[in-house]
Image 1: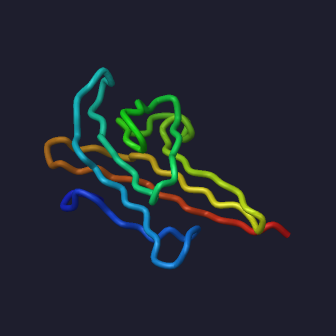
Image 2 (image 1 turned 180 degrees about the vertical axis):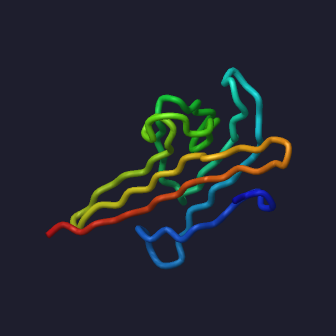
Length: 116
């Protein structure tokens, strides 16, 4: 839960030692979405993200993210790449927003695999 922090740093298991993924919740807003959305920025050290169709991209790695309410892919932020030894994937989506308390709950997944 990000109720007391403007950001959270997570280890990037798919990058070099010491790398991190920073997820910043910049604001909770009411927009054209029927429910509040989180204004989120994802810092991947220069890598770019992509997102599902229920998101609104506001800039480079900056998005308005509604609470997941349906197929995960439509509400998720993604990063995917492959390399000679395998692949890496990252997925983020918002599970809950409480605008009164300033809480944003985020689900984060970062699997990786190796080619056989």
